[in-house]
Picture 1: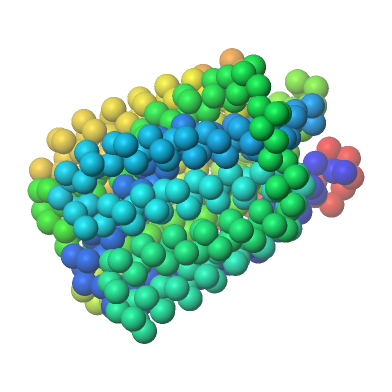
Picture 2: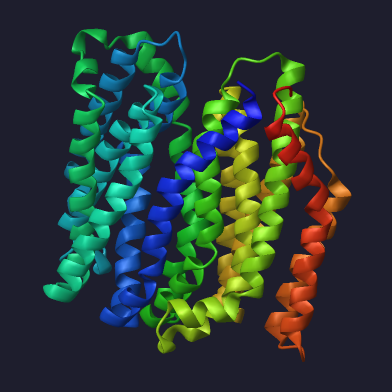
Length: 464
């Protein structure tokens, strides 16, 4: 099958589930900001992000190995799945042993058991969900995303509005949604057939861990870049400011949703067996279009920063719009850097992913320490932008030694310049900024129009 058409087909399928599911969750922001105070919302965000930090540590990143080796035709799928579950459960047992130390954190007081349940449910769900995808259950994988979101929404409404349980209700809704969908996928994909302790062997387990373990500090560093600023904001400014900053982060999440949809489909295409030259051409063509979509989408999000904040959050959170443009630009570079990391995945160079992400995390820590005391939450946004820009730049240079991707650098730099102009226009409140920002958006679209036309032709034609 035409690889471009196959990529578009898988992206559309994942998009129906993931975008629809995530977008529904995104639209619940007004509900959350009305039933929870800014302080409660800030604490809830910290709990959820703390759980997300612990997730890869507790499972030593084994989900990455499940998808990486599960997609190989020569792998023993019994061993991959059984190893994935055993490592996940063993990691949770170790987490329980160190949980008293976590309980010393003030914001976890009274909620630690919920965070632990969230980690267990999310990790087991992730292993079962990703393994179903390696078995070819792409539609089931997509349906799982929709079902999980519907359940999460239903439980959130039940536990926040009908039975006002506040922060506890919010966390329980996620745990219940993960637990039910795990059982759904496990049964529909008949995954019990792949549970074979006899298939677990030292060589394959060591290979999976060698790949996954370096991705644990990678995830930790990604968390530092994305979330650590919220802890510092809470410490220096207060939980209310954290809640406002968290809302600001929700809006650029649209870009991450689209990026994650594409990444789910791209993993299936990137690991396809191709000659080196053909793979380089394939990656180059896809990356050119991917970067164009990222720039156009980011320009649109920046243009609508005030309007989207007004529509999606309560009036008390309207201040969040000020941070949206810079965070959107940061998210754009994060998406582009994620694509480049797929080259490391193909080459089994997870150490390179770790190294580049650690570099960005170090820059973020320094940036937060210097800029938040000076500029408050805007300092955190600028620090995040610089971190992702650094990761993108280093990966762009380093991946050329592994797979030479060809792309139109002048076009890309012109697009980034226009996005930067939009950020300045909005932040400075230039007269008629909405008009000038709209012109910038149209210019970004015009810059990338030919790429979209070329991509459409590749999808329509059978040849590559």
